[in-house]
Length: 121
Image (cartoon, rainbow, N blue to C red; front, side, top):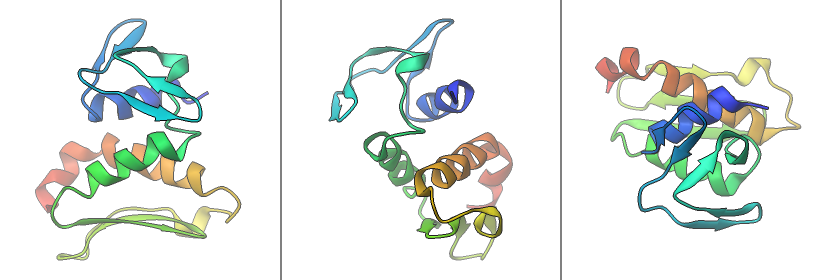
């Protein structure tokens, strides 16, 4: 289970992380794994296994005006198209079998390094 990565993403998406759960203010989303309600246990965060959960995160990352997320067959690249700076490029290390896994890993890496990356926007 990817609890730490899922908690990190939830916080990036505006959730408040508590000791045993996260609270999403004003979010309702239906997906094939259930409804995201205001409070979710860590085990009920599905960013690592559902495109319905992960794609809004990719879209939020792309709200940075110069950042693109390229989800390719052999990996995911997150880069600044104006400067050419690459925040994440896991293309060389990935099998083409699991796009959601390499996209999830790239998103977690980007968010983990967000404070360092912000100077490149």
